[in-house]
Amino acid sequence: MIIYGIKNCDKVRAAMKSAKADCKNGGPDTKLHDFRVHGIDENLVNAMLADIELSQLLNKRSTTWKQLDEFQKIEPNVGLLVANPTLIKRPVVFDGKNYRIGY
Image 1 (cartoon, one colour):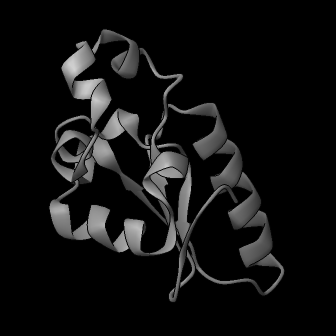
Image 2: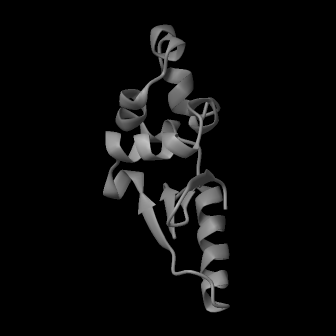
């Protein structure tokens, strides 16, 4: 399992803590993919969007969203998410088959 997010995010930390506890009880091994450390590209965002609608993936509560100009907010796209990974709701979890938001 891969948890995507930012290591300083409270929700990501909680997800990693739960995943580690699950792993000790026979659950899947879990890795953290920190957007700031490991980066993100269009292929990864498109893979996420295959399972999660853009409206659900987009974090409109983020400081980054609030700092965007109105033109960028009208039609958010993959390029915007790649350039600003904090616009992605966290955590995004990949279980080996599908992506979902939350642990």
